[in-house]
Image (tube, rainbow, N blue to C red; front, side, top):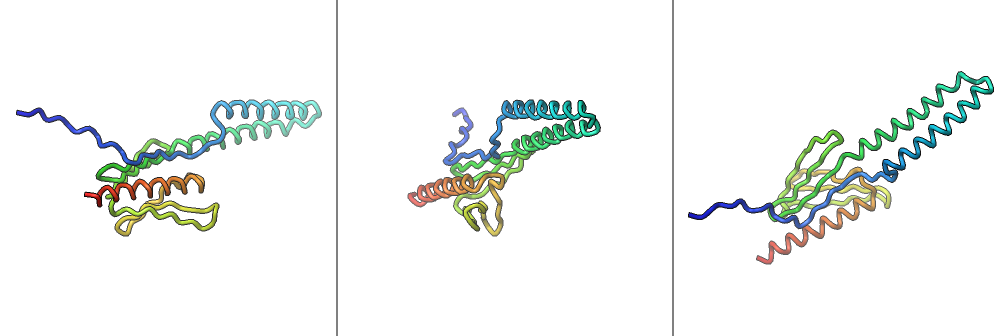
Length: 166
């Protein structure tokens, strides 16, 4: 009798993890907040020394609002999309800012990559199949979306070419 061994997961033919870009790393955020807080403290101290003490709470409020805006931006950066093309499916996993995962699976032979471009700064990447479509990479910049569309289209073309070779 032969031992049954589970087949390993198929190697992906295309694998991409799409994440929002944040130009300021966390260490830079700390330095920026220290600079803003220090400048705000100096200006508020100047105002207190010249008798304009009622404006000092607003300096603290400004620092708090800047901190809150950056924290919300970093929270949005936790979302991501994972595209994976294997022998039998194209899978899109979307992980939101809370870590919840949604999954879409497409049969690679039928899925089409639609790249809609209105101008050089406005575009949209869609995966369409059987009358349904899924927007992919909405948080990416136009050039990044264009690159994903080209890479995924090329991978699907290679997949279809190998299929037709049989």
